[in-house]
View (cartoon, one colour):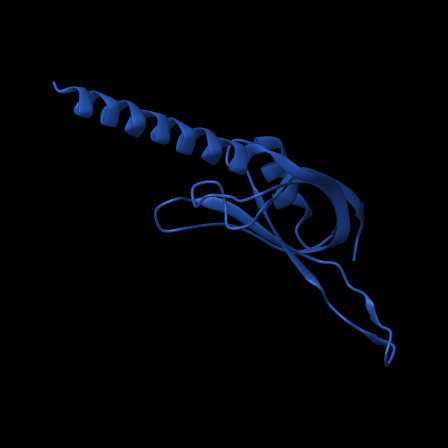
Length: 127
């Protein structure tokens, strides 16, 4: 193997390692943490290749201009290995809940459709 090929191989290996580290950082670093409360209107498992759990929470609100009620939908994903959150969300569909979440910089298709990942659901009340 020539010296040029060895140097080229080292550069390629370093670039691949940097790409893998940056992908891990982008998809696992918690950009923000918080909670949102609203009406849990939808919770499904979907996907062609990667089956992910996705949900929709209606936050509600009031339009200041004309005092009309507005439905603001917030979409979220749930990690497939978080059985506690999945079971809670299935049970609370159609109810008012408080969802605790972590936001990542970017999610990949095998993680979910959204950058918001719910890890805990608390029952608040009936609609």
